[in-house]
Amino acid sequence: TRDLFPAFQSYVQTHLDMIRDSTPEPEQADAVLERQKAYDTYSAERDPATGLFAAMYGNDWAQDFVHDFLFSMSERKEGSSIPAMPFMGGGGPPKKPQGEQASATKKGGAAFAPRR
Image (tube, rainbow, N blue to C red; front, side, top):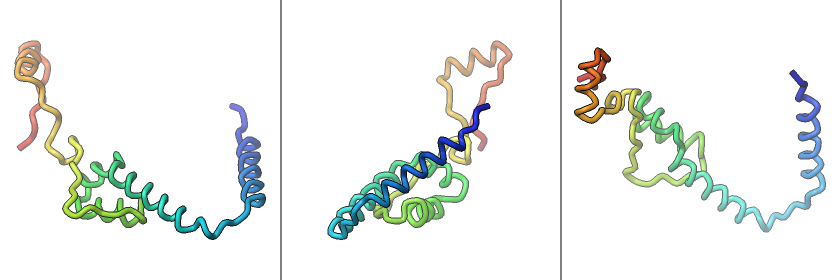
């Protein structure tokens, strides 16, 4: 395999050079923070792992983790809940249409049904 460390070092050096060459603009701080807040809120509402967290640890824990840790500048919507992911305590595997379950059983295959 090829060594990627030199490319990483070059990237870091370029990033540091850009920061050193930039001019601070304190008057932009409020606009930057507002955009970060909008990004965090957008991401908190759409993060695909949130349903997994809710299924494994409960909705309250998932909401706290997403809004207070992952996207700490996000705004919570009152009464929002997160749908739990199937297979992780959220209702079992997806159900097959009636005809498919019957044919799978007839062919000797195992038809899955949610546990009760």
